[in-house]
Image (cartoon, rainbow, N blue to C red):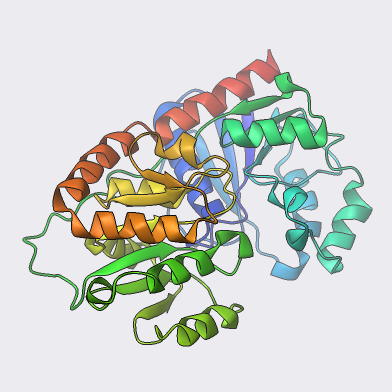
Length: 362
């Protein structure tokens, strides 16, 4: 069996799609020594471990032409049995079975996220047309996403398989240091970005509602790309938090792991997630988690986090007070989170993905 995986998102190291591609491909190399894989990459931005049955091919092209080249590139590798796009896109021509991973259907649920027409989208529409027409099977990250695919796109249930992503426990783990490298001020952490469904305004308002004595002892660190969200900075200033709400910008993995390890509490108020990998990463690093109970997040967190309605500002304030004031509760959440994170492995993701490949080719 020859499988082609189009890993165009690998260079976006801080984006969930890149984490998924990297985790899946590395795990396939560990668990499958029989089948042949051709990995298409936009540049040699990440060095994978060498495996005799995995071949990495760099195909460089301008970012703004990706929609065109993602159609052409698979034709350059000769014959194959199966093509896997580990992201949501269609294909114009195929030489074998075609699998996509749909991580969520958020744009179908939230109108403000629906794709605006631009050159890329027009090229895709012209080449592909109905992108669902040539898909043989869909992988997705959660039962929630599977339900949404079936309910909103009328996809047959037997055409969708859930394969939970994993977390790299060798990297995302509690600090092994002696505790001397502590931040100058304790902080509450959130990893998000410009997407309005991340619901960061709820967290800022909830943080502002903390008792003055508690609020004065903590910073709120918001990690991610918020350049298009001036409104969040304005909200923090309006609430008198401009010195306590810290926007770090995009951080690399090493810095992100340090932020998880040193945070007193990780808060994730998202209104919708196809999976919610930051929740698992925080747990794996030993950080207590307070999360929204929306969409897939209860699947991810299980009983190892405190879960709330994402729009319950007072509830987030109340639970932050409880966690920040109770070291025993933080210890319990830490232990439960570590156990929960250990249940999600990329090796399992790879085995379940390979099982889909094999079933299609039988």
